[in-house]
Length: 413
Image 1 (cartoon, rainbow, N blue to C red):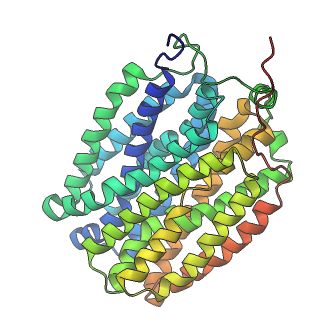
Image 2 (image 1 turned 45 degrees about the vertical axis):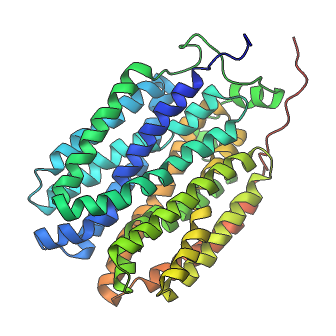
């Protein structure tokens, strides 16, 4: 029984998950804010979408900045700084009176803060604290985004009805301030700092990946970097930029009620928790390129059907199919990046791949609002997302390594 002591890695998992969950809750407020901001300030859809697009781009920029800082100073300081930045941004949003202020506070400050927390924090923690169950840990951290939607979207919709957009910002700010406490006192940068070791014995393959680093300049000259960045650009375009930002207003225009569609989106989030956790488990066992191709293909098929859905039954089918692969792309993408370029450079290299993800998200966020104003609906943007999804299938299958985790070698002295 003496060998079955509680491992401090699980404390790190809980603290990291809560930080990622709150960051996702802030990000998922975008679709709820369209109507109250337009009604209160008289801003049009394209103007509000531009603020969300700016935020997504700076969210993506926060990932390589945060990743580089994590590689240098460790995840604890970056997590605390990111959460503090989010709290400051939310406090400033309570004072907004002009559109440029909303662009600055939500677009730049919230973007950088959430990007620093959500970009590379989970992947770095998983690789530092787990030799065994790495893929599963990556899946759990990735599912925090889905859990944030599952928990926060219905609650934020209800909160907006009773407390308005100011109530949303105030509540999120309080929650961020609360999670800063365990981040300050319980978070650790590495197992060594907590006077322990990572969970599981490292195989020879794992040790090789963990000890290897690739300079960013060298990574940029490889085909695999651009294939990973290109597929993740499509991931951002087809998820955060398009669905997180525009699914709710699109559904309301298709005759759905706000409460029922919020629960459909929450159901999508629940499916995403299942799909992303399962994806982490599969990442250790299946060719990661084929996993990504499957996810992007399923996503393309579901997005083709979305403009033709007008009833709740079919919307729930869409939520099921789309939800299972929403963030399921993250574990295999992180694993492919680590296997190809080495863990020691994961923060910086995956950070820039994640920046590509958010560039795609920013483009979809703005073009969705723009074409909605010009054409009166989102159909063209959904069609473009489906085409890009099929392109991402090709990108994924063209990556040079499978990154299926090798089984541990027999224990050596």
